[in-house]
Length: 187
Image (cartoon, rainbow, N blue to C red; front, side, top):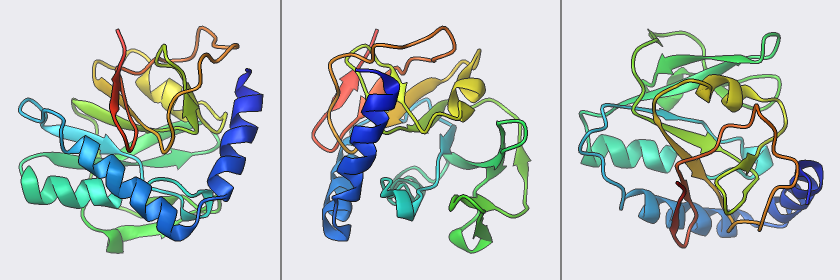
């Protein structure tokens, strides 16, 4: 299937989720996330969930890291839709976030982070067994990840599709994808 076909199917699948089902899936994702090795992780980039798109509750991950790995620094993105680039900000708390025009929570101000990033949690709608993903189609994360030496971790509410047929040279593959049931590793 093509990205467009997969995107349509995944958005429909998400639309069918109740708030309770999304909560249960997000808790399953957190359980899998907690199994990962954070011994050499100092900085984690975490996307913030769009509630209206039924995205996984990544605030659970932020809270878990604060409790279990307080030395890990969490950074969150702010998108520039003109350039399709992101700026990273050090996460302070949910109070410093506002919802932009597209329904994405972002830091209003604060400390911009430009250093090394050890792990990036990547939003996606679907992924395949080769480690490629289908996002919303704007390319923000492909641009951000291009040439970045980091562990690339997708976060998916559902298991993989067999293959994304129209992967191109600009698509950046993931190292790992977490689902509520298991962790997929790609070479």
